[in-house]
Length: 144
Image (cartoon, helix red, strand yellow):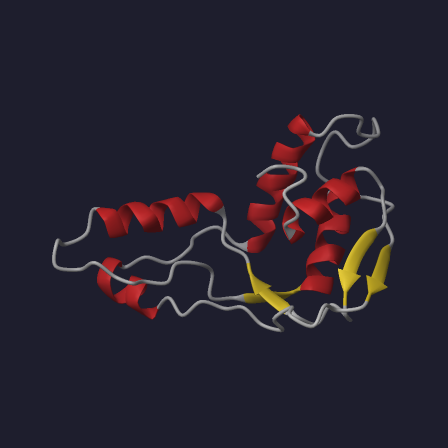
């Protein structure tokens, strides 16, 4: 992930690491399903190495939804950030829910994500600590 890729996880982590305001659109009740990259790669490999008669399509991802406000609060807590959450108007085209149905992946490949949101965030935060310049000096370890 790139620190400036515009995705919610990278945005929130970088903002929290820098003690900047974290922008939540709407009231934060919209949900997303976050899947750690190692799990996604494992699912793709299982699909690619699967039987020749199965070409898909197949959904991969995490079937558990998390609220956007909940995500922001969790990232602030894990980092020990002084960031404040601010709210802005929800764009009209922003979906309220995103959740993949991974039934076929479970049935065909016995695949499901193994890394939960907390663990995935901890790993991602540690990654961003190594690539984001000019972090406050007290942000050297996770606040767990």
